[in-house]
Length: 405
Image 1 (cartoon, rainbow, N blue to C red):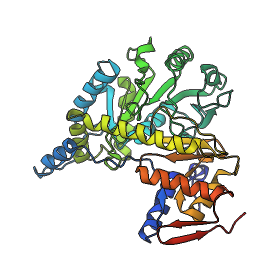
Image 2 (tube, rainbow, N blue to C red):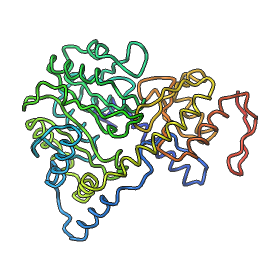
Image 3 (cartoon, rainbow, N blue to C red):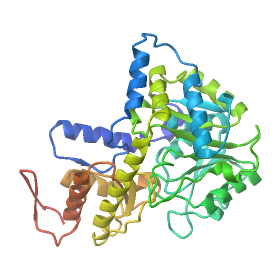
Image 4 (cartoon, rainbow, N blue to C red):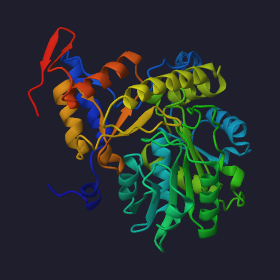
């Protein structure tokens, strides 16, 4: 079969493949534990449900504008003013089928073939392939000190004559690292100086811990006219636990939003009006669910960190936000794909291999599930890897016997 060069250059999404594997095992009745999840388990806000039902009851479910319905744009304007202290116009906003599509159409609007997109490592699995879908070149920037916290210089060192844009995800998936105010300010200044687009992927910006506050990139920008190359991306998936609703947005200069709208109009048209109404309900409704989720996640993080810190051979780094911990398991196995498959096969614990995020020897462990899943999942992993543990392990009524070295 003849396929395009672009298709041949990209890989299947590992996180989606793992979710599919989990669903198959779960359907078989296996006692599998998912520590690779990327969605909160809390309920969707009632205001989102009621808003959807109210519109559904009208019987008028029609096409939506390619860039989003006016009600959602107004809600995003209020959100941007509250959390970014920035007044924007409806023409500065596009609503998309999730923050992922907002990023994708932004990249399609700004990247030419062979141009480069820079992002700190570890990075969200989709960034490299999203660049490749544009015919562009992904350029990960690793912190020189080996940490999850790059310096501005680490970004600057990767800039070439082909560089077109930088994307920053803070707090970061998979590490949970929240970049410092000094770093964000420096990257904004660097991108303005080099005339580069800067995409701020802020999808986790309200899910941060230890009293930290979201960092606003607008605060450090000097170019805030219609020639600004700063793009802010957000959505309802994570903070409102509305992953299945697939509503995200981007805020940028009007010419860029117009270009992104033209692309989206030919790709998918506007997102479902019902799902946009749900997002309006979430954004305009009672906000207590966000804080409740944040508190739950912070407590879950603490439980996971306590267990990992008592796990000899594992180097765990305390996340500042999100619902992920990126732990170094290279003491046991340097090939993270091999280790991840070993754990699901032997003790039925699903993890995400660090190689997919640009750092081998690590596993991404999610703490967005229950405390029971976290504790039992880590205990199973420890039993599988610690040969000082008893030779047998019971999972419910099932007895596992270690048959490996």
